[in-house]
Image (cartoon, rainbow, N blue to C red; front, side):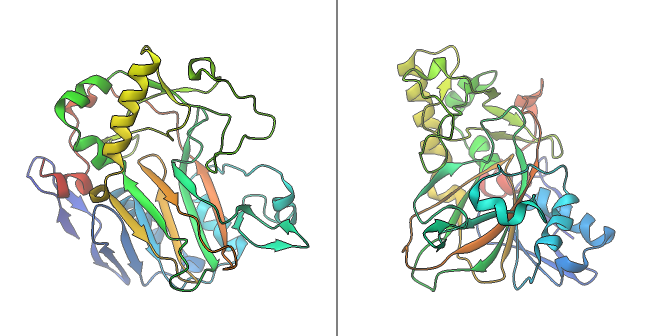
Length: 323
């Protein structure tokens, strides 16, 4: 194991290097690690303890060349917590009986009917299920078919620990104790959800209120919790004040130095912590097939700890911010 951190008051021991037969190599940039020497089909308790700690330390894990069945994915994800089941739609019928925990993410159509969700259009910056009282925890994607090089469909991620930790002090003071009303009506494709009713004034929406400063229940560190941008509202502000504050927070959180981009290969498994990250995907060539299977576990109801302003930075944030 090695120490990752920029200063003695924030550095701590994190999972990195070779541990038994497992090698964990931090990815360049603000977050993520590649895990080698671990076949997820044979994940035992010892291997999971290493994997889980690396997940908390690096926010995102990449495992290449995995050959997982849906049953394998379910067994791995179950170790991380209770499942967040996908809605029953036409795209999920094929998996509902055998593996209801699996979501198909694809742009492929059979007889004109999509076999999965999200298609080939843009998926905006978001954290999964931020529009619910209990947000998403671990998300795992397994790449079964990916477009050839140059066809796009990469996924970008932002470290929201680092987004919080690098805030200008004046902006940081504005958000401690503040909450956002999260819109429930629109999805990450900017489409109205089935059965949802849209409102022109975001103050009248029926979504949950979540703190902007979110203290992680396992690491104890703070991150920004923004969910997604459209139709959200900072409680207690005028519409103009809310829009200005959210615009400033989003501009800060999504700056390139706080991002990494993943170029998918067939067999990749990427798992990440939705409680302290956001992600997006740009549009790609609709002719290029992209098929992924996903599992999602529940996280927690976001909270800001009473002593949040005094909490140390997360190591992967401290590494870059110098705090």
